[in-house]
Image (cartoon, rainbow, N blue to C red; front, side, top):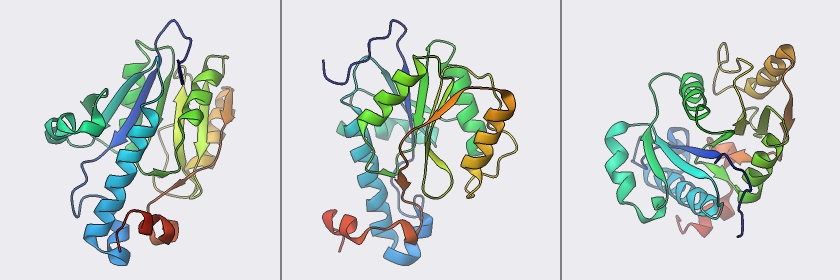
Length: 213
C-alpha cells in the first residue's frame, strides 16, 4: 500500500491548525494582501497539507485545533475526513507541543507534529521521519527558512526542548539543537521548508495559482 509504514505499534501524526477566520490567521500578511486573501492563503495551505498527508497509511492522524469551539466545524469539512479532531491545550506554542507529545507518546512508539501553513509539504518527508524514528533516532527536526522548524518528530521525551525558548524568533531551531546536544540525545535533520508567515515568505505565483488576485 502506498505510503504505508510497517510498524507494529501505530505511529501518530499530528497537525496543529486553526479555523480559517478573517483576522484570526496570518495577521502579519493582512497589511500586505488584505484580510480576505490572507485568510484564503491559510485555508489553501491547510487543505493542501491535510490532503497531501492523507496518503500516508498505518498512522493515526490527529488534527489538533487551537480553539475547542471550532471542533464541530472541522469535523464537518470533507478535507478533514479520516482525521481525529482534538483541541490543543492552553499556553504558548512550547507548552502546547510538549503536552501533545507527552500525551501521544504514551500510546505510540513515535509521534510527528507539523504545522498547517507549510508550503510544498510532502508526505515523503513525514514517512522519512517515521522511518528514522524507527531506527532509534530520538528526535527528527525539519528546519524552516525563518530559523524555526516546520516538523518535529520524537520517539521519547528524553530531552526538554520546549522550555526557555522564545517562540517565533530566528533562534528556535538553533536553541533546540543545542538543548538536544546538551542532553546527549540523538537527533537528525531533514529537508528545509518555508512556512508562510510574513510578506517576505509570499510567492506571488503561489497567490496567483490560488486565484486570489
